[in-house]
Length: 101
Image (cartoon, rainbow, N blue to C red):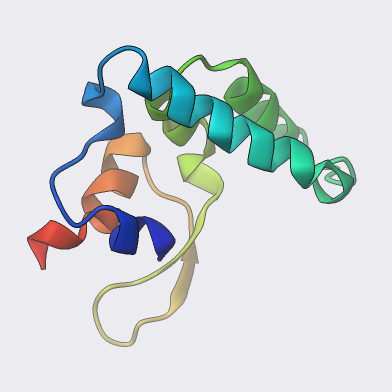
């Protein structure tokens, strides 16, 4: 969704250099903390582990890898149904990069 609009070029979170990967990671962590009222009510141990892993990750690439299995996405091919999760952060970035379409 939003990352496709913000990633018109080949920008990969796992290949970003210091300090940009860390700065963007802090921004993602800030958004998680701003929405903590929602996240604190999650009871699934797997989801809680992924959020904890994301908060402890130093870079945006590692945050993507932690949260990718739980992201909601649309199947890019017909019938365009809603699916939950990517295999890993790499699959998320491959789907989100609009430069490929």
